Length: 79
Image (tube, rainbow, N blue to C red):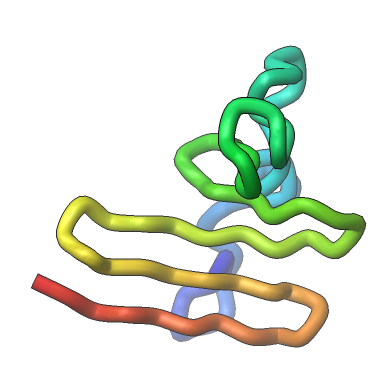
């Protein structure tokens, strides 16, 4: 997610870590507070629990789910 095909870092790892957790200073963005299940980071939906898992959703059915611990990325393409 953070590297190009030639292996060079594109997006700083620390930014990705920060972006994929509830936005600091906004307690209503934690999982289960404003939304019954998800929380929200910098345009990323974050899941509850101690494991870092996050998702992105497009406006026309596209979706990406990421579980870094499992090294799992699932992508749903759509119109």
